[in-house]
Length: 356
Image (cartoon, rainbow, N blue to C red; front, side, top):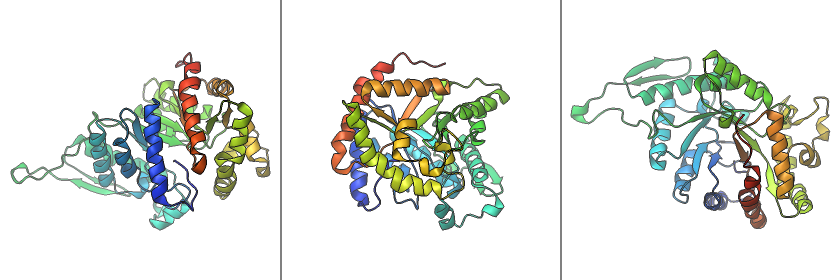
């Protein structure tokens, strides 16, 4: 993310996104996650590293995460170098988010042979190679999908691997989960990484993510911390609750849901299932009004605080709420005001929420 209307000039949207990062940084927001997509015109961010590198120059304290890097489409040696370099440029203001998703047209464009193994299997192999490279010792890896050889250094002629990350041993690694009981999140618990729950699940399904994380942690003899858990949601606040709801339904939240999410998620057999509070609910019932009632966090500061408390209680506690960003175009002032209300009125009202 962020999301943009596909007809808008890319240069304009990137400039606006950078202004958004600068504004959020000044308001004290702690982190921003930038996605990676290639053939999704509504999410025009094929290189989160490039955007983050530029955003570092307009921010002072906010950390950035790749949200997420689609490792299965990349050579792991390239990724290892790019993320390590970015970590140095940021002096540690970097999270390394990874995931096994991607549009089917991305997979087709890269001519990824799914008969040889799933995207998740490719991601798992890639992260192992990246971590091995960051150790900085010579090795040879011949896997199912990748072949990498890190040769011995030749310091006498100025040759050798040198791009270890700034953070030791490496930036915090986060893994995205979008489906109930996502198997990918078991690895998160085993490794002590950060779980990211995307915005595609109803709160009734989110506890399954933590259940899988804890299963992995228990297997590895570790204690998972809910403070590490990040959950993504659509959030919009105005001084007047009814005005906020009208803005959401008739503005970007409603338009993106109707024109983008419904067609995209509905193109796969169970793509819309995660949004439903009742599995028997027909797809036709998934409207902006339904989302306003069951999923979105929209209203005045007091109403939104209560919705976040309910989410917190429903899932058993979590650490960070990630706010999905939309393209407000000429109404950007409303979005900036919403961010200000979140920072100055909403968050102070939630200070008592602590890790469980």
